Image (tube, rainbow, N blue to C red; front, side, top):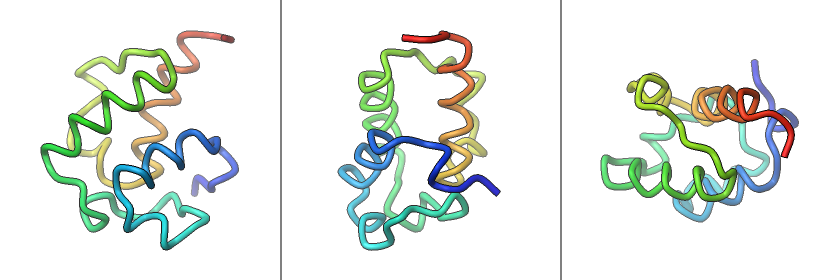
Length: 89
């Protein structure tokens, strides 16, 4: 299981700013469901924009299936793949 130590404070900040219900559960757990924390279709778009801006990456559509938005950990996995592909910054 992915734990919070695999992501940085920036990731937690983006998530908890957009989905305040997550902030009550710090540290975030990888298996925490995003839909149950208030993620809806409008929030998905805003979340993607914020993550792409925060990390200066573009997450391709093929990485953004419904499974990417199931949990805190699954979304981090999709983002981390792009960070790895982009290399050191």
